[in-house]
Length: 316
Image 1 (tube, rainbow, N blue to C red):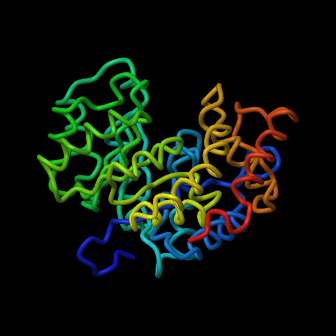
Image 2 (image 1 turned 180 degrees about the horizontal axis):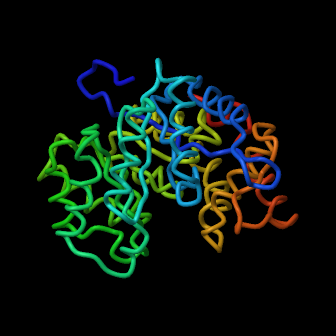
């Protein structure tokens, strides 16, 4: 549900995970509903990004992704903004997924750049993909600014500016994963499209990017430690530097263990392992070919998670 406020898309969103059975074959709908309800019950979480990268959008079937949106809408659509990720190589397939999401109850779309663009693309191709994908659904659309190390998936300034001028664009999930790039993109968008919310979304760099300025965040850490992410966001927004530094100190080891450890392709598996350690997911399984984490890595994640969850030190 999109609230009737001057800036309805501002705030912290949790990029949620998809619990699967022990073999990674089927969606655990009961655990998913519980996960979504748990996260959106935290004050300060204004919405969800479902079917994002953390939600294994590259590995779920079209029907599974539609079902995820349906469950999200049923569980918390009356109190949260439901943003559905769309990730497809074919623009018409992306359009079908966008239409599915709208019918299933999504309030907005987040259109991911196809992975093939890492090799090469150009502005006309990027604009065409965004036009076609949302041509029928015409939902509010959030852009995805990919990491600086993802090749042409990371839009150059002229492409980002052209995308921000599209009529349905309301925000950018800014995931450059590099603070100077974030700062440059934010400055650009403030100049060419001041109505577009810039959402700091590099989980390892939240404190720094929040301090540079942000209208919110769409991150998977908020699906794991939502109270702590909201605390960090509010501390920075309210100018409580010492509180923000303490929150960052507690969160940084966890962010580093999940996202800053090679290979990066295991970030979702690490998030799922943490949710399993916290008693939130029955199984930590990611969809194959992703294999289970080692016992040593799980131990490191457990220690980092324990630090992030220590009471009081990150409270506001």
